[in-house]
Image 1 (cartoon, rainbow, N blue to C red):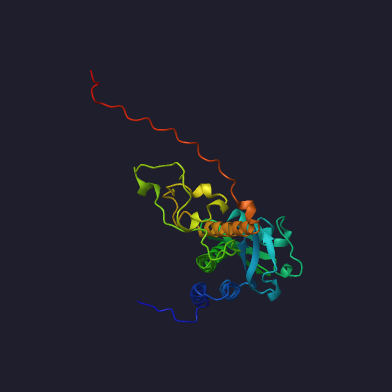
Image 2 (cartoon, rainbow, N blue to C red):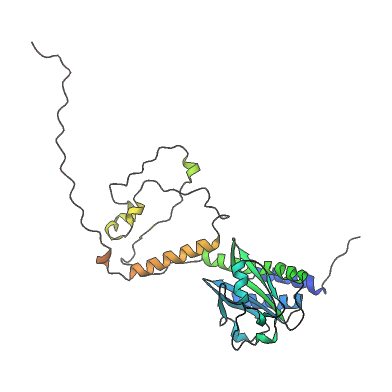
Length: 296
């Protein structure tokens, strides 16, 4: 017999609502706040918080139950407090009385001592912790089934954070002050993997001439140009979306942006290459020996 589960079941309705919220494109804090409301209702807890990993810090970006002023203001280092312990060990952690644990970290003004029962689950994306979902209530230790439920509820929260960060990477822009107005100082290109190159002969010697096109005009003003003077560039077949998580791409993008900003602070004279010595004169080529028989 087929049974349609209509609206009215708090658990089913709440989970479907979480999945819907995960696809929203609004501000991340608003999305996570709404998701915390749903999680608190489903899990029947007083407090639901989402800490998002930002560098080496876990910053509260979503909450149900605490004052709104806590959003963005409360942060812990990875490994700090029980929440930081969740991120560090990448496993769910629960405590019947959090304040009695050695790992506990008191946050002044938050008022969490009124909700001593704690359960935290890691939010894992790309093999790394990207946040922590924390549930708290006044009494009654979390059972194993409740910790399992909390772990499942963390999945759409993880999706929401990952989608937002992926969108940020797609729309990322490198900002800085150009040294020469209207000039292109770099180029993006698609390069072959080692498998695609196969057994083709490879020339590994640096190019004896400056780079072609726009880049050549600024050959002497680009630090590290030696790294891009080769005829061939190599990528490995392991560089795929599955093996290079968005966290690594984000870190690389931010690192390059920082390098550009720091380089743009330097005077142009600091970037100029030293004058190169003139090439040695070529020796005259001797005439070819004649193969005609000598005259008698």
